[in-house]
Image (cartoon, rainbow, N blue to C red; front, side):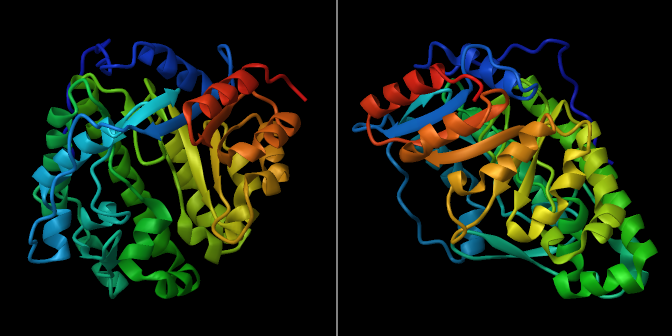
Length: 370
């Protein structure tokens, strides 16, 4: 079992040096969860600095890619360099998240990870369902200990400089995919449905404990809550997901995975679902029916157009009372403003200079319902 970290009733939030309106930026992102607008929708932008405060650490002669990924000191120094290398505009706030790859949650249960240059992947370790009970979370697990070590190093390096986030966690169907591999899991839904449901329920319970542990840990350190999705908020929020869902029907998704996703959302103050790829769109209506789900992050993927090509998806989300997270080019902004409501919109906008950033804020500040 994961022990909860005690936290003050109202822990003070750490201010970010050089960003005097950091509280207002957090307040706008807090309002996003309720599809509310304080003065304008959330807009995040950043630009590179000419003279960063900290240099990027030099590469080392690591013996392996794993050694590089596990170099805690190098990770902390890189986070300091990243935070100081950009000017954070609009509602942007500098962040850094511990990261051993997207399947580290499965590694907490004994799965081993292999490493590439920019990601890692699991080695399936549930070869027979009779061994399912051997998959056990343990606080003695080396991956668990390393994530805590990296988190602590980032908290120390980030004092006054950046917010430290929660690592990338994938329970539910994605965890089972790591244990079994996608082909086997597809067959399991037909041949071992009860075993699949039991294991999904178990990893969902463990995930809730892990989230409580990390929220408590970050709160005690005066952190706002963030993760890889880029939102920074005073709420205990996270990103439920199921990338495996693109391989199953709506009926199977609803039966095997939707209950666990709904349970994840109920355990959070706020949530944004990571809907990954056109193959997962068949599940959007099911997700929009989860009362506790606040928002959708629609990732259409390379080769599938731009945000403005998917206005119908965003309208469906808004019609269901959900927020939406969009990453758009400057030339898409007028189309977005002209076709969507400002309530519940979180925008990441690419800009090339400060004048463009000022223009974005001016235009978004005048955004009203279409």
